[in-house]
Length: 271
Ligand SMILES: C[S@@+](CC[C@H](N)C(=O)[O-])C[C@H]1O[C@@H](n2cnc3c(N)ncnc32)[C@H](O)[C@@H]1O
Image 1 (cartoon, rainbow, N blue to C red):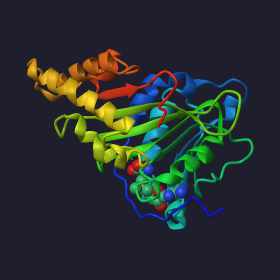
Image 2: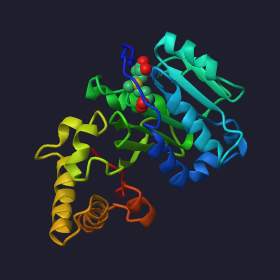
Image 3: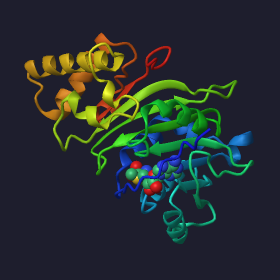
C-alpha cells in the first residue's frame, strides 16, 4: 500500500495549540496523569510539529504540570526539521524523524497522540486510514486528537478519537471540539474553514455536519435576537440553544466561558 505520508511545508507559531493544551489539561486530566501498569511509560506524541518544535515544548510544559514524569515525543516527516529540533531535546523530550507509522519503541505506548494541521492538503478519503494507523499506537482508552487551526490558534476544531478498550482497528469517533478566542468575533460559520480535513468540504445540504451547523446558526441567531450580541455571550447562549436542539452538546460552564464547544453524541460522531 502507498505511504499515507504526504510532504507538506507548513509552519507553526508559538501558542497556536495552547487552547488545545488547556482543554486537555482540564478535560483529560486522568489520561495525562495516570501512571499505573503500562501507563507508567505511556508517552504523548505530537505528530508533525513543524518548522520549530514550539507547540511540542508548550504542551510538554502544560502536561508536565499534571504529570512531571511524562515523556514527550515530537515526530516530524521533514528530516531537517527533526534534526534541528534536537537542540531542544532532553531526557524526557525526544524529537524523531518519521511519519504516521510512528517511530516509537515497543516500550513506548502512547496515551495521547496529537496530529494538528497535517492533513489540510491530503485526500479526505485517506483520513480514516490515518486515524486507524495513529490510534494503533494508543493504549486502550488513549486519545487521538486530529484537526485544524488558523495560523495563530484563534479558531480551532478537532476530532476526539478514542481507542476502544478491547481492540485495535478504527478508533471510536467520540466527539468534535471547537474553540475560538473571540478575536474574530463569533458566528458558527467561523469554524467552517477550520474543520478537520474530512469534514471541511461537507458542510452542504444532506450532510449531517451541515445539519449540525444549521442548528448552531439558528441557535446563534436566536441568541442575538434576544440581545446576546457580545461574541462571548452569543457563543455561550448559542451553545446552550444548540444543546436543546442536538444531543450530546456539553454545557459545562468552564467550557462555554472559555470558548469551547464539545459535541459528544451518544454513539459517537457517525459521519
Ligand atoms: C503546518 S505544520 C503544523 C505544525 C504544528 N503541528 C501546528 O499545528 O502548528 C505541518 C508539519 O507536519 C509535517 N508533516 C506532514 N505530514 C506528516 C506526517 N505524515 N508525519 C509527520 N509529520 C508530518 C510537515 O513536515 C510540517 O512540518
